[in-house]
Length: 158
Image (cartoon, rainbow, N blue to C red; front, side, top):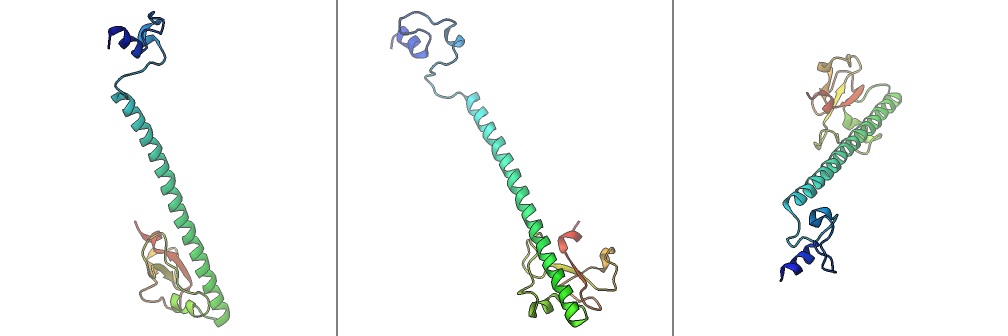
């Protein structure tokens, strides 16, 4: 390849053989024989990293919001079942499993703790709900007088 052909290839000389105004640096675009430079690749990779990071932030926020909404729906369903049980029998249920006989198909899992099983916290009708020590795991001993309210165990984790 001659020097003239090389300059034409790089865009320094146009097809008439005259030098382009400003040379290769003055032109907006010229053909590089070596492909992409390291700086161009770093810019592209950093832009992609920003896009992926933003997408991950949106995804993680939406999944945690979905878990929280599912937990609230489960709590509302269980509280409604407790109220229906009390209206029908005149007393509070002794356990959450007592609600599965007529009011719930099964005790739902707590989606915020991501553990399978009866992972809810319960309180009796005579206990003060503002005191965290009064809340007990539903799988453990039942409060005296039955179960008056239920909460997620994730509310009690530090």
